[in-house]
Amino acid sequence: MKQLEQKILEEGIVLNGNVLKVDSFLNHQVDPQLMLSIGQAFASFFEAEAITKVLTLESSGIAPAVMAALTMNVPLLFARKRKSLTLKDDLYTEKIYSFTKQEESEVTVSRKFMSAEDRVLIIDDFLANGDAALGLSRIVEQAGGTVAGIGIVIEKAFQPGREKLIELGYSVHSLARVASLADGKVTFAAEPVAQTSSKD
Image 1 (cartoon, helix red, strand yellow):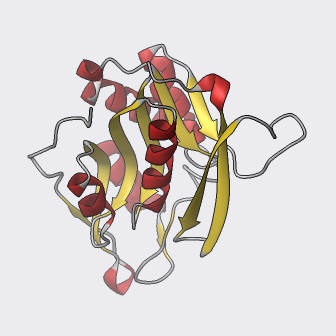
Image 2 (image 1 turned 120 degrees about the horizontal axis):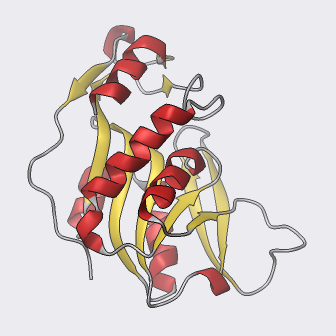
């Protein structure tokens, strides 16, 4: 997605060879028009998958995911990282390790919002080692639902996340694929032509 790639080149900051900071438009301050374009791109790519729900992880995935859900006219559901007084019983729960934060979180989704009838599009802001997408996929599968696709805003293609997801049969679509962050410079890779079919 050229619009997203241009934004990364203009405003992204490479902190080291593995971390790309995009807090000016994605995961702290949010560019709503760019998020709408991102949501429309995901909706277009997964149009044939009969999506019934979009699932993401709080909080950085919410902005792009809500725009995809809006475009598809389906609910957005986000897995929560902290339990609250109003969300403590009858939950699907998974542990997810964050590459960026270097910590493990227990994430939860209320059972009343996910069912075996759901065809779910998982959306996440970054794909590195694939832990977040895998954890969300396990939540969908706990509910008996189908992961109809995984949409990634920014993929670090030099890390193994995509390969893990593809090997498990998931359809993965990334809008910007970063081939390298070497020497403080962002270099992009092309989106692979071959995609797997959705996992049923």
